[in-house]
Length: 187
Image 1 (tube, one colour):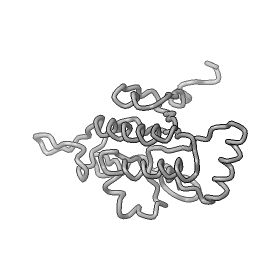
Image 2 (cartoon, one colour):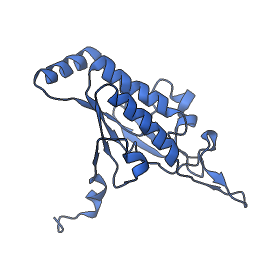
Image 3 (cartoon, one colour):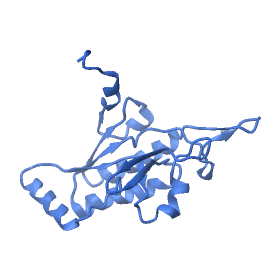
Image 4 (tube, helix red, strand yellow):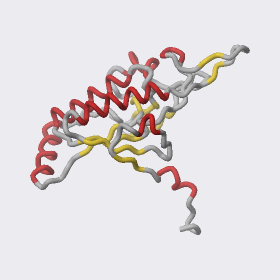
C-alpha cells in the first residue's frame, strides 16, 4: 500500500534489515505525502486527510500496483499523527534506521474547508491556502520521533526550499523536478 509503512511480510522485512545491519548497512524506508485507497480506513479518513481543490476534488490520484489510487494529504487534516505512528512502528518494530520522505515537507495548496484550509472571498469564491505552520508542526513532531530513536530523515522536495519546514530534516534531495526540462540535446 503506497506510503502505508507496514510491509506485507513483516518477518522477511525484519530479517532483511538484520542482515543489512550485520554488514553495517543502514536501512531507510519511504514515506511520502499520499494516502492510498487501499488503506483499511480510507472511507473514514479521506475527506479529513486529503487536499482538495477549489472544485472539491482530491489532488493527485496517482495509480500504483497493486491497483490503488494515491491522493495528496494535508497535514492540517489529522494525517500527521497517523503517519508518525507508522514511522515509529517501522523504527521500533522493524529496526529501520531512518526515513526518506517525498513531498512531506511541502505546504501544498489546499481548499479543504473540512479541516480549516482555504478561504472564501467577499464574492463567495473559494480559494486555496498554504498550510505552512501545520506542515512545520508535523515535521517538528516527525523529527522528534525519528531522532529520539537515533534515526535520520532525508527528504526530497522538488525545489520547495522553505526553512520553516526544512529546518527539521537531516538532508535534502532535489532534481526529479528538472527531468522534464532536460532534452537529449541539452545532455
